[in-house]
Length: 306
Image: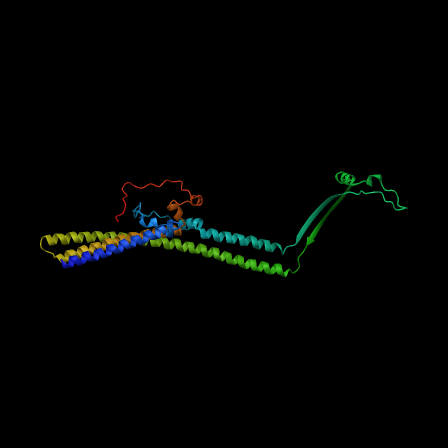
């Protein structure tokens, strides 16, 4: 009885620790879902009710690693950012290189002039053409009538000789371009490494889960055998209690291995850039502040115990 009471006391302590962990995770989740959780005291009485359960699928049905890498390269945001930076640097380098090339400019000019004014009163001045004598109206008439047009055209060729400033800028842009290319290659290589590690981690988590399930089943069989032996006087209470303790430990390890598999699955989805798609999260809905889908609560969900 003393040993059983000690086991119950230890189980109560484990239960208290688990309930405390749940309460802490609720605080973290509510803080992430609300904008000003610190100023909303009514959230303290709100409890998070999970609508789904952790389920380990029977099979993974993973695509080949090369296909997963291609999906990740197309979906990971850091790859898009590296591409944009590389393209921007390429444009800047091309613009700087143009400063080192000869430039040829062609121009064509067409103007309309007008000559109008009063008759000169200086003695000895020859008489002016009657069409040139007049005021502002006569001036506008000559402009729109194109009485005195002026045409010009030409070419301008500029050949830079030893433009050291442009050469230095071009060299700096080339160095920056090589640096951005290396950054893009590094980001792509890191994505490949992340995908391969995520696949290995997912497979390892599944193997550990399957091992934990097999161990828990063996512990159940062991407990049944010890209970049967105790029934016929072939075992002791201490042995049965130890078998129960081993079964509880194996059950906890099974739950932990299931959680580890879930974490590995989340890491895998993050590695291939499919976190939003898998969780049905739309960036457009987030920008608009409206969710097009209606949430539903299953009938078998009940409020947690206080």
